[in-house]
Structures are given as structure tokens and as C-alpha cells.
Length: 180
Image (cartoon, rainbow, N blue to C red; front, side, top):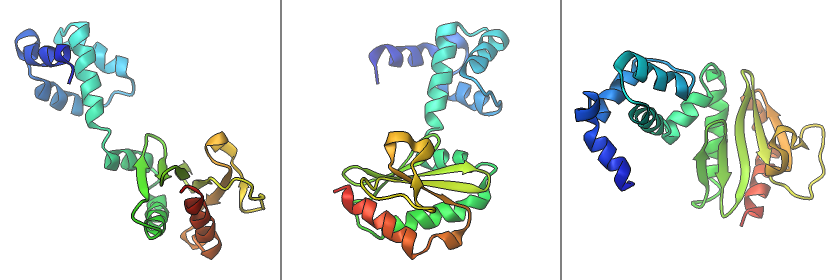
């Protein structure tokens, strides 16, 4: 941790009246949609200076970025898609020990030495599976990458677990093999 940041955290109880842990607990009881709303709350309601307020809010957000929280947040209101997500993860983990599942804010990246697929809850009823299958022709089901842009070459829209069939597994396996 940066020395100046550590000093700020150490001085927080004396300067603000609460420790960082206490501030984090307080912020957990609130639900702010924007960083600035939380900062303004601390400044107005608790008379915390801008520097301390900004630090408290920033460090509170980092705590919420664990991989399980990231996935949980992606599927809030879309819980019906979780079984599809979990099955996709199970399929790719069977490919080998080198599969890395990397949750991000809005999607989960599937990596080997390189990224080979992306799982994204696109709507309340659909997961988009992005695949890197350079040179493979598109079809009615294996579409152009769409919203994935250059990150992936193809997209498969999945609305039901029954769509995790042999054909889809072969596409995933092919993308995995190309990511060596």
C-alpha cells in the first residue's frame, strides 16, 4: 500500500472520528449509485473533508470487487440465468487445468494463455457467449460477434440450458484449443 494512503488511514480515527472499518460499515447500510453521492453524504452528514471522504468511498468499493460479488452483481434480477452460467463454467473447466475464469464488472472472461470466450448476461432472459474463432464462418446460430466487437469473433445467444448442446461444446473446445 502507498505510504501516503497508509498514513491517511492511520490518521482517519483522529481526523474523522471513525476508523476506516467503521466508515465502511456505515456505507454498507446505504445504497449510493454514484461515487460522488457517497462522498457528498460523508461530507455533508458527517463533516468529513473531501480527501478523506473520497478515500473512504474508494476503499469501500474495492472491497466489493471480489470475484463472487462481481458474478453475483451481474445476475441480480437475472437469477434465472445462473444455471446456464454455472453449466458453461463446468463445461470449460473440464477442458483442462489451465482454464482461468476471470469475473469482471459486466462479464466473465474465460482465458487460457489468451482469452477464448466471454460470458455476459445480456438481458433478463439471455446470456451472450462470445467466442474467439478466427476464420470460422458465421451461421444462424454462430453469429457475428455483435456487442463484443473485436474482443470476440462470434456470439451465441443462449436463453435455455438445453442450448448447451454438443455443437456449442465443440465451439467452446475449439476456441479453447486456439488460445494455446
